[in-house]
Length: 108
Image 1 (cartoon, helix red, strand yellow):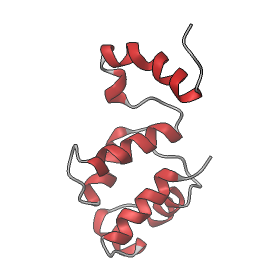
Image 2 (image 1 turned 135 degrees about the vertical axis):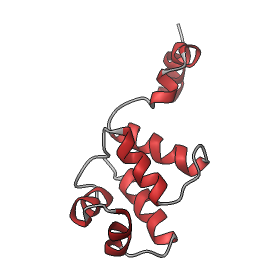
Image 3 (image 1 turned 45 degrees about the vertical axis):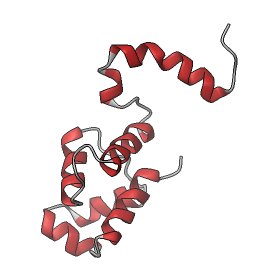
Image 4 (image 1 turned 60 degrees about the horizontal axis):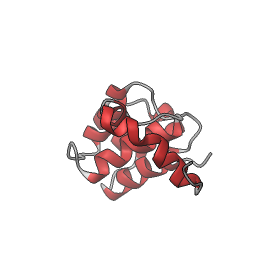
């Protein structure tokens, strides 16, 4: 599986003009572990609070496109549907149609 979550984390950090060690020091992250996440050696964290810490440290605005993309990439790489989607019964009911559409198969 491609490391989209880690690549996006690195892109955001680089865009902020911060080196890995500097960023980790400023935000009290373990540089070795954070580096492994960026390089795809560790999967995205299961704990939403950790992903929120990353998003906050990267100065992403809560609810912005980049914020949502970070959480969506984390969920996708863990093989999950994002929590906010699963919390909405109306959207959950539509998931089978979405899955079939993505597979390009017709509904019976």
